[in-house]
Length: 182
Image (cartoon, rainbow, N blue to C red; front, top):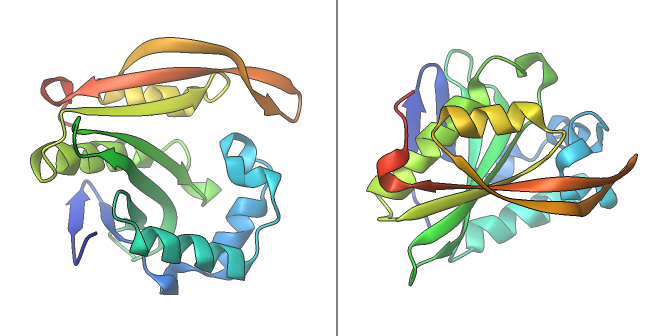
């Protein structure tokens, strides 16, 4: 779907993911119970082959774009952010993301990445609305969305099974004119 799109702001660079980003570090993120506690990937074994297969499916996708989140100063891949599936008729899409490198948690990187991908979605892809979900216990994710102007629109009670029982999922929405500049 993309070719050579690079988005950057405040030390964060987003570029389309590449098969070369599929490393043992990437796999270890997905296997880490702290990193994957809010990821659906936690329910299946993650291997280098499964990660490569997922990345290839995203590269081949007609309705999703998967970006690698890169630190601009040293070029390290620290997580991913996806825009999709994209509904071209109604001009809306979901955004989902994770920071795999735990040393980068709490530094505002997800907030910046969300802002970059939303700006791209609204300006370059002509989207009208972007949506996201967050587990009720995923406070950092909720804050990152809200800092960008996302509004909590719904609560899906006990929608997801976690390691400690069921959790609610909050659904957030953002219209093009509500995005905050970070």
